Image 1 (spheres, one colour):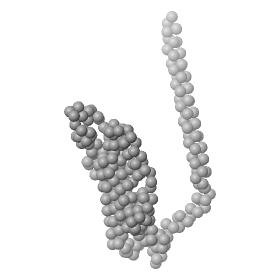
Image 2 (cartoon, one colour; image 1 turned 180 degrees about the vertical axis):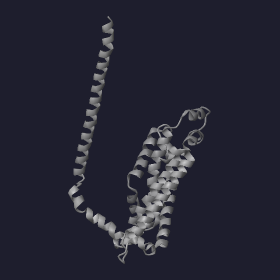
Image 3 (cartoon, helix red, strand yellow; image 1 turned 90 degrees about the horizontal axis):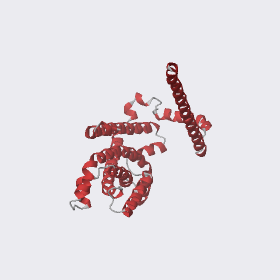
Length: 294
């Protein structure tokens, strides 16, 4: 009797170890199968996109040589050996960079205002009617689905060259992007305060004003700052189609083969974007906590 009792726990332990080993093996095979499916899907996608590794490695030297040229002055010296010659047009470039920042700021602020006005109609828990929610969501989808540079090109054709086209393009795209983000914040809001205010006979607008907006304001501001970071980069590219900003000067330098000017303008844009990203990230962290920095 004593022997049976002492042997039984060992048998159970062995059985448990066997079950655990089988479970680990199944997980390992599932992981390997998932990795194989991912690799196969990636390979098929690369073939469909005509990604040719032979071409990549054959012409990779052209890519490297271009960067070698843009960091070389007309005198044959490296660009950083003569900063004055490298950044000869810094006054003009900084002025156009300031224009880029203004385009981003005005476009982002305008888009945030329209997104704030529309997102309550797009959120499932605050929209007054299903048909209105459907219409507003489709409108926001259209605004963010069309690339901003396409909007900029359309507005350049309509209103001519200049910053106005860039502002309108960024405003529309920001409305669509921020409208979706804002509505998702609203859908996660606590509706009990709204129900309490509604029970007093308050209007829908009053419920949004006093019950929902106080809960979501911090999230709105955080996303708006993040969108401003993105729009600074967007505005730099929109100059390629004549929508104002420093991108307009960059595309001229590229087309006319002003190699050192290309690197100087690119470096100016990159440093500016770095500073804005760091500053807005710090600001979000100070206003809304460390979690908002991500």
